[in-house]
Amino acid sequence: MVRMEITYADVAWLAEAYELGDVWCLTFVWGLDEAEALRRVGATEESIRPLTYEDLDDEGLFPDTVLAGRLGGWTVLIEKGGWQATERDAVRALSAATEVVSVLRHDHATDNFVYARDGETVTSFNPTIPAWRYGSEGPRRFRTAVLWA
Image (cartoon, rainbow, N blue to C red; front, side):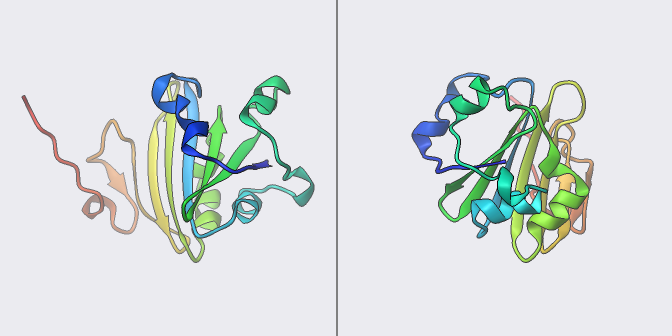
């Protein structure tokens, strides 16, 4: 588990290449600092330390390491090769007294989008089948429009 400051320059590569690979999860947690977000997904105090993205690759720490950084009022958790933040217990813990948005990309299983608030999943769905939703507001939340050319 890692705590670090994230700037746009640090994550610009996400738009330019497929650096995260075929399995990754990005989770945004409102109002928590990095250390608290990491603790909520199971990090111990001694495992929280500053590293760079390059350190993670060089030391072979992926996929078992979660990066955490700040982006405005959000803490962003980056899991390369992982999906821990989308698991039910993690969603419940991360969203307690706040809100969470998590996007999982998984080429070998099911992609997932989760929005949770106050420990409850508000809506969750596979982005490739957005009409099939579950959660307390399931299909009513984040309606999508399909435009046909």
